[in-house]
Image (tube, rainbow, N blue to C red; front, side):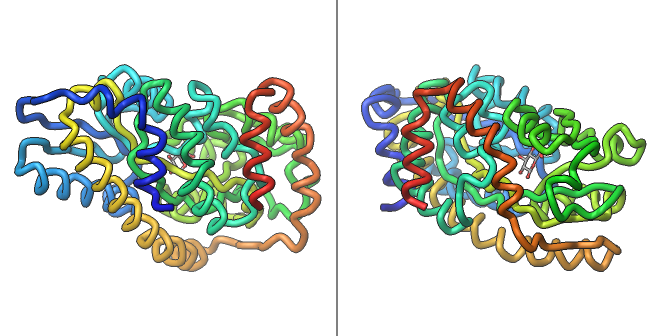
Amino acid sequence: MTLAFTIRGALIGSCLAFAATSVAAEQLRGWNIHVEDYPVSIAMESFAAEVAERTNGELTAKTFHNGVLGSQPDAIEQIRLGVIDFGEFSLGPMGTSIPETNVVSLPFIFPSIPAMYEMMDGEVGEAIGAGMIERGIVPLGWYDAGARSFYNSVRPINTPADVEGLKVRVMSNDLFVSMVESMDGNATPMAFAEVYQSIQTGVVDGAENNPPSYESTSHYEVAPFYSLTEHLIIPECLCMSKATWDKLTAEQQEILLDAGHNSALLQRELWQAREAASMEIVKAGGTVVNTIADKGPFQDAMAPVYEKFLADNPDLADLVNMIRDAS
Ligand code: BDP
């Protein structure tokens, strides 16, 4: 099953029915939190170029990189309202407004990154996409964000006990707070842009992220212990505001879906190279990287996170099981 095909599956009966018959030339405004040479950013530029070319300039797309249009939680609300037309988001902070996206924020839910791709390109992605569409966000392509690991300025983490007492910044979503608290750490939800200074000034001891974000934000300069727990594999999404989407013609919608699909393929390829390059940069910068000999104790420590999530969201148990059974 191809990615564009499954997203079309989620769209059938909802968005495609709302196509306009004609629109005036329009420039779409796009949100991106990352620096310009980041894999996400390059793929968004390629998306914009394809859209402009294939609509003969009738539809253009301008991406505002570096988070200049605001923090991610705010941008997610703005895209739902149609204030921002498109953007590239982690499904992590989407969980507070779109419950289905929360299943991919459960620690260790995907056994590997290839398994995540396969599931997001199939039924799991379709179910999550349907939840997003219902709440005003149309997914155009699933992007890779690798696996997130802990880093801090105090000590390497080898077991859950090493997290005890550490002040850890998390993305804004209660799931990540309970993830850290289940290891007796202190979790602080905070905007991405504030993390560097907060580590530097000791407001927090560290955070958790994938190698490209750890490197591109220079967090490694202030939190030089990077422990490869790989506890979260959270896919990302190039998405469109449904309010904007509904104003486009069916032909334009098809072009956006295709361009979104193509940009995702490019982004996934760029991601692999950037991950390796980022690891080299942080090591050369003096980061102490450690692998985790046994991730079992970390996985076991997450039992209360799953229990609470399933108790609070019984209707999402099927989706959680769909991922677990496919693993
Ligand atoms: C990065 C994601 C970005 C998040 C950031 C974070 O690509 O969308 O905002 O993590 O931790 O990996 O806030």
